[in-house]
Length: 220
Length: 220
Image (cartoon, rainbow over all chains, first blue to last red; front, side, top):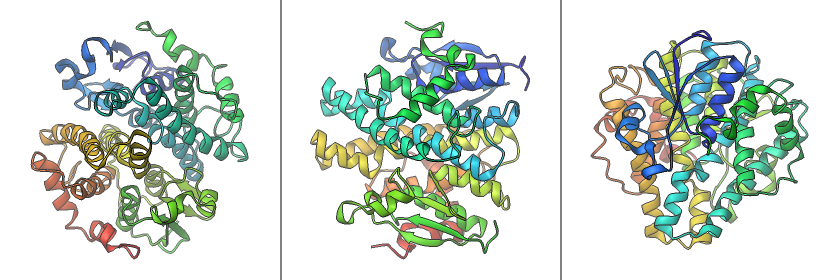
């Protein structure tokens, strides 16, 4: 795979999982043909039969490389890392790699899926949770996750300018979009100085800026 | 790291994330010193200050290797794979690895975290969801996930005796414990012939059998 290779990314500007993959592609200097899947219009294009054929999980993002569809943002990140090793988005040492993956997965497994659109829709339709209850739900899981992350990152000498050392890794690629989700519901982030500092460092890199939801062609 | 190395696993017999790590350790022929974290007794030992010091995420499992704590089951699996390459639990080819990770993550991100104990507790306490509503919630996310997995696996020539080819991988290590969770709430699994066939194949291997919840020293 090279910078000129035949990649297609199915994305939605507001999807934080798609945001992760957009950052990784930018950091690797890869260009993908972008296809937009509107998660809200007409009941959600991700549930339409066209997209279902591409990804039966009915979630974005999906990356297509020479006909192979890869979904799950962290599977895509690992794939890009294996196919295009430079610049590396994981450290070299196995212990350090484990630390980075642990941070990334604590966001990708234990914060994000609980606050996903489909969960919000279920809470509203099946459990009659009103706006306030749904905001409280989102804040609860983000706070639990961010509290743990701040504590993991704050006093660890392995933390540098970024979550691990001075170069962006999978951990930052997961953290920054999650911060965007937190801001969308006006979460107070003042208890997370380390997370805020890392977010600021990330936005000094064009790869993170260009991947932001508001900078996507499908942004509303 | 060798079979005689100094590993400690914090586990709970019923945790399906810990179940994954137990299978991986068994497949790799690794022995870990087991510590048991009772997720229900006295409000949950995972929230106690002793365990919080080990893992501020307050979730099991955690693996400790020479003082480094690694949490998040898939980070642990990747670490074991890097440290003890044989027998491999990921295929060699990058596209195949992506397929295996996609299956594993679709369970670890999009099914399991939604049905976790802490989510059940929140649904009950904060949203007054009764037993029936909470079972319906669990069945909903498992069905969505299993429907997609059955469709991904059923007609794909890459599926073999196991999710990918004829040797167990991360995908089977995630699938089998999720099937156990499904059985615990009496989910009807008859629409998932491929998943059932793979589960049956897995239980022909002692590594999967020994890792089952009922075969743990802390089983009740």
